[in-house]
Image (cartoon, rainbow, N blue to C red; front, side, top):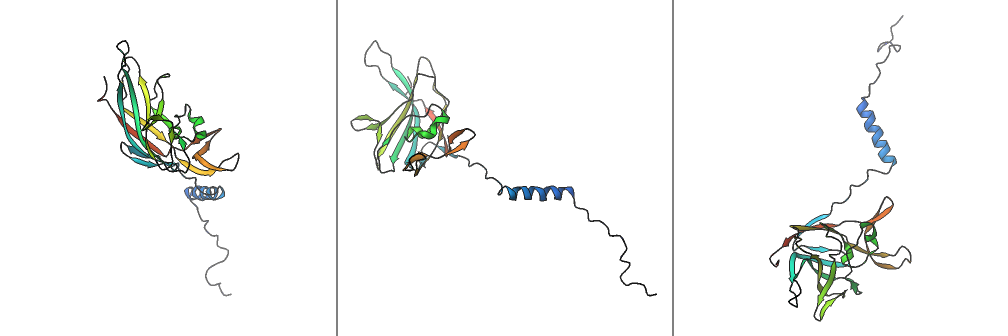
Length: 220
């Protein structure tokens, strides 16, 4: 009889061994594809300092400085008042007058704001209750609470230093931006803070983190 060429077909084949690491990798890739790909890492806020200019969408904002300001007493029986001031040069880029506003008391409430100061969603360190903030824009006739289209105004956010309280060495601001999008309820386009869902809350996205040293040259 003639022997079959190429060896016997009944010879057992050696099993192919797939490393466990490869199996895990293939499984992970499959799950990732099923879920629509890897989720994007959260965007880090832009780190800015004194003198920086930041485009907030609705406003172009220059972070001028932080300083200690002394308000001299008008009468002998009064005492001088000391304030920590945050100074901004703000240009309203929209077509309508905007409010100067106030920083939000809670981060969870910030997304409803549409004013300039409403975009300063966190100011650290926090100042004691009852010391502010007092917020206004400087105008030719004194102080105003409005920011007119196309006009650059200097905005002051101030906190009072009561008693022997000392100013901080620096102040850090978490700053949000605006987008002109349809309102959720009325579907009418308006300026609103860019925000996202975070669990049961809607929180503004922090677009810039600004650190300002506090100048103390005007301290009493």
